[in-house]
Length: 235
Ligand SMILES: [Zn+2]
Image (cartoon, rainbow, N blue to C red; front, side, top):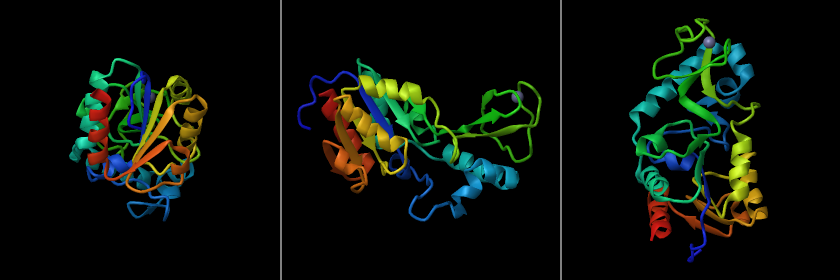
């Protein structure tokens, strides 16, 4: 993809690979574990009903790790692109950390929720949250003790799918960064982008199950590939 001119609207999908270099681990599909927990125990509505304390403790820990992590060169490069790009741009992240935002990006959509947000099951309000949920703090709006992590669990619908699909439909370029492409609905984005005649580029550590769908795949760490690609776009 040497010639990038003619591109105005960009959709970027990011996954675990971009935040792994900041020291954040996420669910690994190959063994079904997330920080040594079975994913169905800590990332499903049934797991939460069965053992809410385990789940709250798990996300309390994730919240601490997110706050201790720092954006890396890939997050900083995407923020630079977001700042400079005149056309439409949307960073759709599967990650629950706020490293894109802390790097300075504004056009970010968290399709799987946010680690630093709490969601009240009594009134539906969402609140920025940096403390613990384990000790049952009341909802700042309704006062009920009904806060859960604002995370999309397995079996739940990812957030803002309409907005994502609309952006992909208008995209001239779809870029996937650090994600295996194996989990739907994100895995379907590249196929949708191709049917909308967007160019498609994959930046990943290794070839993914979705690689065959992309016009071009570049292999390497996100902290190297993403700044290089952003420089090309802004040249
Ligand atoms: Zn509430």
